[in-house]
Amino acid sequence: MEDELFPRACAQVAPGAVHVPGWLSARGQSELLDACRTWARPPAGLRTVRTPQGGTMTARQVCLGWHWYPYAYARTVVDGDHSPVKPFPAWLDELGRRAVTDALGPRAADGLSYDIALINFYDADARMGMHRDAEERSDAPVVSLSLGDTCVFRFGNTETRTKPYTDVELRSGDLFVFGGESRLAYHGVPRVHPGTGPAELGLTGRLNITLRVGGW
Image 1: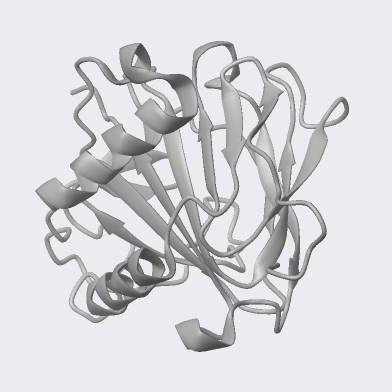
Image 2: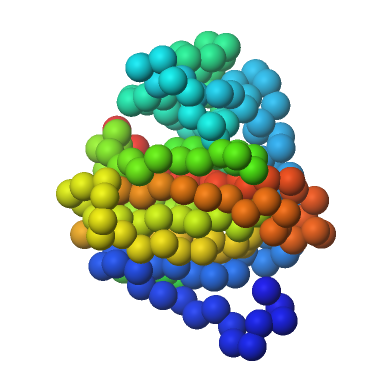
């Protein structure tokens, strides 16, 4: 918030896991939101994700490059309208590599080529249980960008969904990158704070844009 006494500082939450507050400018947030709204339209648009056990995720999702479904990837929306997945744009790859450079240093971005985006929309009641991003062959860092409402992002350990974990407040424009020792750490979103996003952005709810490297 602009009226805070001290600016939020970049912080290492765990080895290889870094939170960079306010990484996206107001213009960058607006441009990314416009792109998300385009991607969310059908075909291959925003959908409710159903688990093999018959449940549903409360956060809705759209994918780029490769389509993720529990718990694999495909080139079509196999659990939706069966349309081809939307392409992953080159500018998102550039954004992802710049994010890794800023969070982990330029060496960490060497040779990276991002080709997957999972975009999750959270309304006021949505949550995300503790999970690992383990369906990719690549161990490249995961890049996470937040738009809209503030959330509690729970970042845990690589062994269990339970403690120890650290709760981080992610606001609109924040960047979170995790790789190296923390690449397969469990993480989730136990809470979204409705009405906390910047009014000028014009978004009700929260969008999380997660960039990954498939490695295929």
